[in-house]
Amino acid sequence: MEQTLVLVKPDGVQRGLIGEVISRLERRGLRLVAAKFMNVDKGLAETHYAIHKGKPFYEGLISYITSAPVMAMVWEGPNAVAAVRQTMGATRPTEAAPGTLRHDFALEVGRNLTHASDEPANAEKEVALWFKKDELVAWKREVDRWIFEK
Ligand code: DAT
Ligand code: MG
Image 1: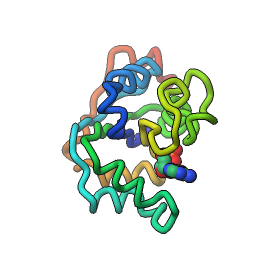
Image 2: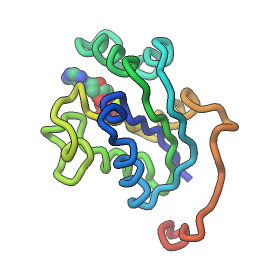
Image 3: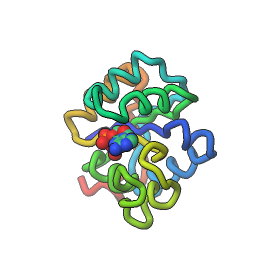
Image 4: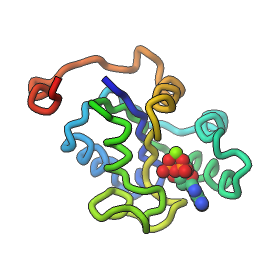
């Protein structure tokens, strides 16, 4: 089953939106695999956002993600990466579709509430970066067969 990393970033945590994010992913039918509430140190932030190193917003991004606790999670399901990105909405909240989290709860790209892996290969790397293997919980729900076709 495809897995993806989700972070409720410091703005989402401070604004009391952890529950809103979890609720939307649960209601979508995705299955929670792991969760931890944590501070992000500079090393983890820099590895996570290595692809953005050198961009004008990079320093701000690192200080934003390390400024206060985040809720880190792994969710799984068929096409979990694409499904979660769709539920989050476009990176810039003013370009995010109505009904998405970033549309409904954010205004600025530098305060866009969540992170979600952008493709399956990156999702695998990000899950491994944020979670140890034994922190991932393999489980099934009675309702799975009504949500997952196979
Ligand atoms: P996403 O978080 O949708 O995957 P991304 O990987 O392109 O977006 O960028 C990572 C984060 O960096 C994004 O959530 C917010 C910040 N960011 C991206 N582009 C930015 C910009 N032009 N100005 C300020 N912050 C930006
Ligand atoms: Mg990204």
